[in-house]
Image (cartoon, one colour):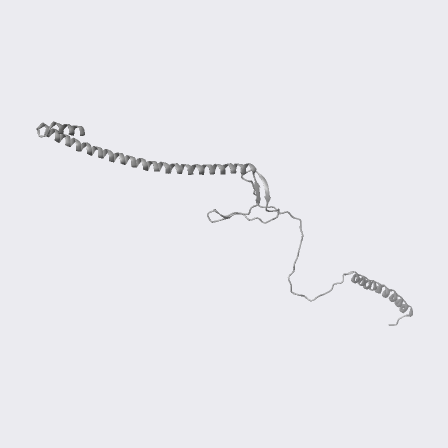
Length: 200
C-alpha cells in the first residue's frame, strides 16, 4: 500500500493536534494533584507506647440530694456558735442493731436561750431548797426517833412501876386478909389489925 504525501501530511497534522490535546488534561491533572497534596495537613508519625489514657470533660450540671431533712431545735433561742460551714462533712449519731444511739453525732451549732437558762437557775435553786428540806426532815425524823426511844423507855418504866405497885398491893392485901382472919379468930390484938389496915 502506498502512502500518498498528502495523506501522510494530513495524518501528521491530525496527530499533532490530537496528542497535545491528550497531554493537556494529564498535565492539569498532575498539577491538581500537587496542589491537593500541598493542601493536606502534614502528619508526624511516632512509635506506639503503652500508657494509660486520661480523658477529661467539663459539662454543666447540678447535684441534688435524694432527700433533705429540716433541722429544728427543741427550744427557741439564739445561735451562739456555729461549728460547721457549707460543704463540711458532717457525721450523725451511731446506732446499734436495735436502733439505740451508742455515740452522739457531731455538734452543728451551740444555741443560747436566756429564758431557759433563767428557768434552769430557778429549778436548781428549788432543788437545793428541797434538798435542805430533806435534810431538815431527816433531822426531825432522828429527833422523833429519839423521842420514841425515850417514850418507850418511859412506858416500860411505867409498866414496871405498875407491876411493882400491883405486886405490893397483892402482898399487902394478902397480909391484910391474913390479919383479918387472925383478928376474927381473936389471935391478934385489934392494934395489929389496925396497923395492917393502915398499911393496906
